[in-house]
Image (cartoon, rainbow, N blue to C red; front, side, top):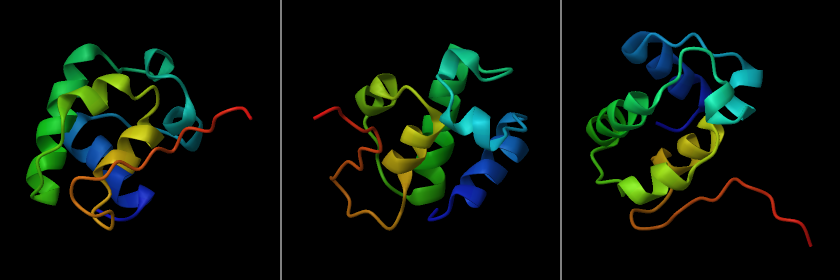
Length: 89
Protein backbone atom coordinates (compact mmCIF):
# COMPACT_ATOMS: atom_id res chain seq x y z
CA UNK A 1 0.00 0.00 0.00
CA UNK A 2 1.71 3.13 -1.24
CA UNK A 3 -0.98 5.73 -1.75
CA UNK A 4 -3.46 7.46 0.48
CA UNK A 5 -6.17 6.49 -2.01
CA UNK A 6 -5.39 2.79 -1.50
CA UNK A 7 -5.58 3.37 2.24
CA UNK A 8 -8.86 5.25 1.92
CA UNK A 9 -10.31 2.39 -0.19
CA UNK A 10 -9.29 -0.10 2.52
CA UNK A 11 -11.02 1.99 5.17
CA UNK A 12 -14.16 2.25 3.05
CA UNK A 13 -14.34 -1.33 1.75
CA UNK A 14 -13.08 -3.29 4.74
CA UNK A 15 -14.13 -1.17 7.72
CA UNK A 16 -17.12 0.64 6.24
CA UNK A 17 -15.63 4.08 6.99
CA UNK A 18 -16.15 6.52 4.07
CA UNK A 19 -13.51 9.00 5.24
CA UNK A 20 -12.86 12.41 3.73
CA UNK A 21 -9.55 14.28 3.48
CA UNK A 22 -10.56 16.15 6.63
CA UNK A 23 -11.27 12.86 8.44
CA UNK A 24 -7.82 11.53 7.52
CA UNK A 25 -6.19 14.50 9.24
CA UNK A 26 -8.60 14.74 12.18
CA UNK A 27 -7.91 13.30 15.62
CA UNK A 28 -9.16 9.71 15.66
CA UNK A 29 -11.83 10.47 18.25
CA UNK A 30 -13.36 12.94 15.79
CA UNK A 31 -13.55 10.57 12.80
CA UNK A 32 -17.22 9.66 12.21
CA UNK A 33 -17.82 6.01 13.05
CA UNK A 34 -14.32 5.40 14.46
CA UNK A 35 -13.96 3.44 17.67
CA UNK A 36 -11.22 1.59 19.52
CA UNK A 37 -12.08 -1.73 17.86
CA UNK A 38 -11.10 -0.20 14.53
CA UNK A 39 -7.47 0.08 15.72
CA UNK A 40 -7.09 -3.69 16.00
CA UNK A 41 -9.14 -4.39 12.88
CA UNK A 42 -7.09 -1.93 10.85
CA UNK A 43 -3.80 -3.28 12.21
CA UNK A 44 -4.79 -6.81 11.20
CA UNK A 45 -5.93 -5.70 7.74
CA UNK A 46 -2.76 -3.71 7.13
CA UNK A 47 -0.52 -6.58 8.24
CA UNK A 48 -2.30 -8.91 5.81
CA UNK A 49 -2.23 -6.34 3.01
CA UNK A 50 1.44 -5.40 3.45
CA UNK A 51 2.81 -8.78 4.53
CA UNK A 52 4.63 -7.06 7.39
CA UNK A 53 4.29 -7.21 11.13
CA UNK A 54 3.34 -3.79 12.47
CA UNK A 55 3.80 -3.03 16.18
CA UNK A 56 0.55 -2.33 18.00
CA UNK A 57 2.35 0.33 20.06
CA UNK A 58 2.86 2.42 16.91
CA UNK A 59 -0.87 2.32 16.19
CA UNK A 60 -1.76 3.21 19.74
CA UNK A 61 0.51 6.27 19.57
CA UNK A 62 -0.98 7.47 16.26
CA UNK A 63 -3.42 10.32 16.60
CA UNK A 64 -4.75 10.45 13.01
CA UNK A 65 -5.49 8.10 10.14
CA UNK A 66 -2.78 9.86 8.14
CA UNK A 67 -0.26 8.82 10.80
CA UNK A 68 -1.50 5.23 10.62
CA UNK A 69 -1.11 5.33 6.83
CA UNK A 70 2.49 6.48 7.30
CA UNK A 71 3.17 3.47 9.54
CA UNK A 72 1.83 1.00 7.00
CA UNK A 73 3.25 2.34 3.73
CA UNK A 74 4.90 -0.48 1.83
CA UNK A 75 7.43 1.81 0.23
CA UNK A 76 8.98 2.30 3.69
CA UNK A 77 11.67 -0.25 4.66
CA UNK A 78 10.57 -2.87 7.19
CA UNK A 79 11.50 -1.99 10.73
CA UNK A 80 11.37 1.76 10.23
CA UNK A 81 8.70 4.15 11.27
CA UNK A 82 7.46 6.97 9.12
CA UNK A 83 6.42 9.71 11.48
CA UNK A 84 4.04 12.04 9.69
CA UNK A 85 3.56 14.29 12.69
CA UNK A 86 5.16 17.68 12.69
CA UNK A 87 6.93 19.00 15.74
CA UNK A 88 7.38 22.55 16.81
CA UNK A 89 10.97 23.86 16.67
